[in-house]
Length: 128
Image (cartoon, rainbow, N blue to C red; front, side):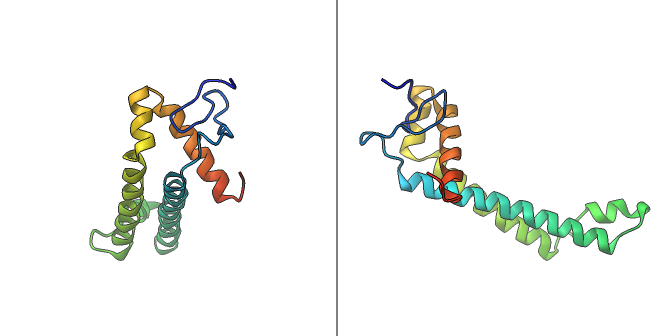
């Protein structure tokens, strides 16, 4: 036996997937994880872009409030809300996946989540 496993078929210590025909990495869980990573990055990129634009619009030291507060009805907030909703929907899809439900029931949700993140990032980067 190669070590303790999570519900997703990964070693708890290394967070590496067990290469076994009995513990496949379900694409219906890995794909949303990759999409979640991209959605988080898109929201962060949008925030950084708006912050840079507002620094240009309000360069003065005494204009810190104008830089920090986005207009309530502005397109920047609407886009951020859209990006966050997309991110939250993906997180919900992952959270309620049968593998994650099983992991919570078995008390290994944290380890399974770490392994899933690692697998999603590796797959997104072209890794294993």
